[in-house]
Image (tube, rainbow, N blue to C red; front, side):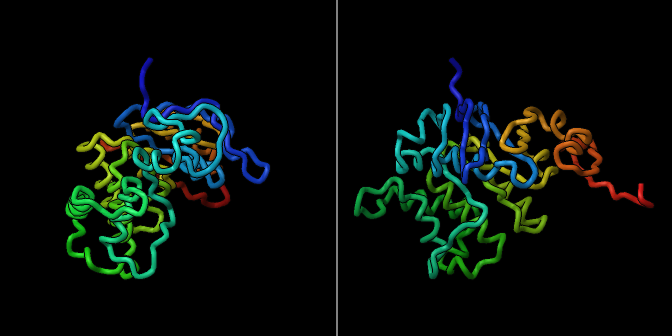
Length: 262
């Protein structure tokens, strides 16, 4: 039987009496980048939180061979890291202190960081080019700088699976590319599996080797970007008029303005 970094079958999450995730089946290979897209309310964030074991779910689910319901929060945090859409930054915390929180799953109760922990923290700070910000308060950083720090905190967990929830939603186009390029470089160098809930369909098609399209908690399409990002399918699911342009780096989704009432 093939081992997957993530396996779920008939995965369901009920929130407020609603089936927010409604019978999702998903297998993700080790080292793969899967972009999860869909309109608002499709269940993208809820799926990310279920995969991380942060909310109750039903159905089959394993992440890096572990069931989040049985393994416990600390054990799961050693194999899966979630970069949230709206990170909580402790008041007064420096960049180094925020990144160091990523080592929490490896600390013994009432324990402190070891030399090995500090080596991981310093290595991640260097790899993400954050050395000049190391002693600065995280709340004083720009949006793009803070996103890099939050990514560094997730990578300090040394995860096998990295979950990104709208990682570029608050960034300009330059910082979007910077953050996603960093994720791609780390994925390739460390063989990290990436599952990213993404709002921007063009970025999803440019970076994801595979796209999963959700609607009302269900998978309606799953495949290579060119197969999923089709104008007819996107028009049906999003209620939008778009044109999809074929480019060497991946599909580009362009909205089409209606003119003269047509």
